[in-house]
Structure formats: structure tokens, C-alpha cells
Image 1 (cartoon, rainbow, N blue to C red):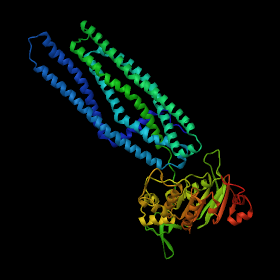
Image 2 (cartoon, helix red, strand yellow; image 1 turned 60 degrees about the vertical axis):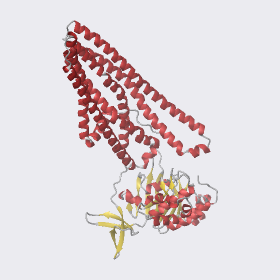
Image 3 (cartoon, rainbow, N blue to C red; image 1 turned 120 degrees about the vertical axis):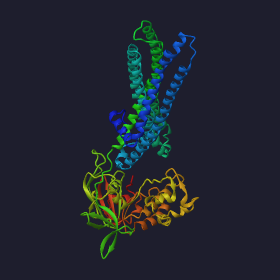
Image 4 (tube, helix red, strand yellow; image 1 turned 135 degrees about the vertical axis):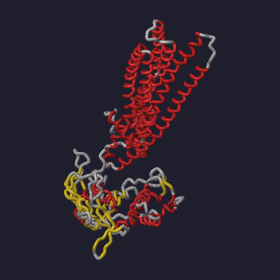
Length: 626
């Protein structure tokens, strides 16, 4: 299982990339948020400084002269202070609400781009990356990003602006006290950095462990039948416990350091508060710096106002570290190389007019390859289904070659069957025809055209596939059959089902074709799912059919029913068949026997029996397909 990156290798680059999203889509909102943060910081500082005015200009004179009973100035000062604090509250609410909108919009856009890019990745990516880990990009990583954008980042910016503003205000009150407070602040920030670094390391490990755990859970959910068949419940529970223990350990360590940060900072701030009061009192007594009682009170209030931003820094910095690690994982997936498609040949509908091919928009059941020669001229090659492999080599990984100098041909309308042991290369050949993977050397020709010159969308439109592992989607039976041709009418859906002999069991479902299936066809037998997959291929009406062990999960009785429909479906088409049951391929025009990526026999059923080679041994039961 491939692990996600342990930490953000380039947080600055990741941060710049995130800012690009924000600036591009929300420039004015960000400007308003920035202004609101500065106004909020201004209100905090101005409110504290106003305390000096209230004490020195209104309270102290009244204490010095008890006969002074005019409270107009004091009342006016209190009203002004209230207005300043109210302004701070309003701007704080505004910027928090705006950040919710910005973060949700950015989160939505990133999810859209992530999913869109994922759909463009080659199958080889999913062969090497656990599905649970990929899924964690959409859940854990995107969620930590949301928290950073909506809370951590703006609150951290607000904290920094507030701290700077407070120190400027402190300087205006007393330089010696400001220097003393600055030294204390440096010590506190050093403590924050030390504890945050320790916590951040475990938060990134927590994300890694969570991705591993999610991948394992998903794998076990899909493999529950196998687990139970082999009585492996205790084994998988043990493995899960190990993964869960790792997650719990990393989460505990991360939160242990994160949770001690707040008490440590609060007590350091309280100590600073007391020391400032003592030092300020001494400075006032000895007349150093012209400190007044109001100035000391204002300075103490300013130092107290540092509690919140420093606490915010200590709280949010860990979330930002974790979010940047998650964002880097997201961008790493988004930067994965998509499927390369340099093809220019397209598949189009054509009509025959006076013996000449002419492109048309209507579904004419006639197809041709369109080869553009100039801007205004194109050459049309009829799609006949002639497929040829010429000296093809292929390997999934460099150290192990799967196909070795393989050459084969399928003439238009022929039914070609592949047999051989597991790992012989049967399914690989099918995958190469679809260009799910790219060959190492050689060439594959389709109607005389190198398939690398054909656009993948057109290539795959010409091929109908029924896979060994059926996959159905949540929705009605009708929607699942129509999945390959979204504009198909209800009549076409029923016709396809009848062709695949699926109409009988569908008609006996509670709501017939409108019966909703969930969980990849829960409630249907494996054979019924396979029939729906065959119906889905039938409605697609492709010029070439590929059946990858399409009847492997169907019982013998159902197989006979399906085979009749399949024979009708395969009529006048080039068909490639992979089957474990030799009875399903005896009428094939050519049977190709594969072994270790090489063709060892080719011929029809009778010819191969007469050779008394590997196929003969398979047909007579002397050998078995595994």
C-alpha cells in the first residue's frame, strides 16, 4: 500500500497555489475581509487606549476632586468606547461570514477539479494507489483545507495584525514597558514554535495513518465474502487493530502537544501580566517614561488583549500545518499525468451516397474512421472491425514482461477466443485494444490504422465490453441499462434486455424496469447482474464486442439462455471472447491459446483438437484452466 506523503515538502509553494484560487475567484471578498481584520484590530487597540483617556482625564480628576460631579465627559467617553467595540464586533462577524462563503466555494472548486482530473487518469494509477487513500483526498484532506480557509488562516492573520497593532499602541504608551513585553513575547513564541513543531509532526502522521485505515476498511468491505469463506475474521480484526492503534497513537500524541499548548501559553501570559504591573508601577513611582495610572491600566489591557491572538496562533498553526500537508496531497493527485491522447482520427456516422461515404449526424448504423487530411478535406475509412497485433511487447512494470513479440489478427466479423492459464495475458490483450495501457513496442492496427492515431473516445466508442467483474450503479434497472447510451428510449432498453434474456427476471421485480438497485446490485444474483451488464453492452450497439469472461458467474442453465442472446448480439461483429468454459467458444472462428504472454496454438475447435496439443488437453480434461 502506497503511503501518502508524511509532510508538506514545499508548504510555501502549496500556500501560493491555494492563494491563487482565492485571488482569482474572490478578489473583492478578500479585500473586504482584509479591511475588516484591520478594523477589528484597530477597535481592539483603540478600546484599550481609550481606557487611558477615561482614567487620566475623567476618573483621576474626580478622585482628586470629590466635589467634581459632572459626568458628561465620562458618559461621552463610555459611549465612544462602546461604539468602537461595537464596530469591532460587526467587522468580526462580517469577515467570518465572508470566509465561510470563500472557503466553501474554494472547497467546491477544488473537489470539482480533483474529480475531473481523477477521471482523466490512466488505469495504471488506480492499480498502484489504494482506493481508500484516494478517497481520503475528498474527505480528510479537503475537510482540513476547509477548516484552514474558513477559520485557521483568517484568524491567524487577524492575530498577527492584532499583535503588531498592540505593540505599536504599547510603544505609544511606554517604550521601556514595550521592550519588556517584547522580550516576554519572544520567549512565548519560541515556546509555541517548539510545541507546535512536535504536534505538527504527529498531525501529518495522523493523516497518513487515517488514509491507510480508510483504505483497509474499504478493502475489507469489498472482500467480506472472501474473509468469511476462509475464516479470516480474527486475522483482519488483528490487522485492523494494528492500523487503528497506529492512528490512535499518532492522534493522541498530536493532541497531547496541542492540548498542553493552551495552558502553557495562558500561564505565561498571566505571569507576563503580573510582571508588567510590577514593572509599570516601579516606572511610575520613579517617574521613568512619564507613565500615569491610566497609562499603566491601558498597557495592562493591551497586554491582556494579546491573550486571544497568541492563543489563536498556538491553536491554528497546527491546523494550518496539517491542512497544508493535506493540500499538498490534493495537488499531488491533481498533478498526476493524465491519459495521453494524441490521436486525431475520429469515429463518425456515415451514409453511402453513390458509392461514396459521406459524414452525417444521424445514427445510421454505419461507421467510419475520419482521417483529416487538410482543413477542408477528410478521408473516410469504413469501420469493419479488422484488428491486428504486430510484434507487440508489453509490461505493467519494467522488470516483468507480460506479452512477448505477440502477433495476431481478427478479420471483420470473426469471433476470436482466448484461452490460457491465469496470467497468460488474455485480459491484457483486451486492455491494450482499448488503450487502457500503452504498449512497449510493436503496433496495433484497427482497420489498418494505428490505434495510437485514433482518439481514445472514438476508439472506445467502437468497442463494447462486458467485463468479468460487473459494476452496477445506484439507480433504476432502466438507468443502469441505459448507462452506455443515455439517449436510448424505453423501447430500446427493453429490446436490449430481451436480447440479453434479462427481460424475464426484470419483469418479475417489484417495480420492473423502475426497480431501484443500490450497493452495486445488492438483492440481485451474480448472474442477474451479469445479464444487466450484457444488456448494457447490447444497447450500446458497438461495431466490435469484447467479452471478458462474461459468463463466468452464470450457472450452466442461465448460460444457455444468455448464449442465445449473445449469439444474436455478436452477429456481423468482430468479437473477442475470454472464457473459462470451453463450451462457450467452440463456435469461434479462431481460438488462440496463450501461455506466458505468447501464442502457442491458433485454430478453430476442430483444428486444435486434431493437433492434440494444449487445447486438446484442456478440452478432454487432461489440463484445467486456473
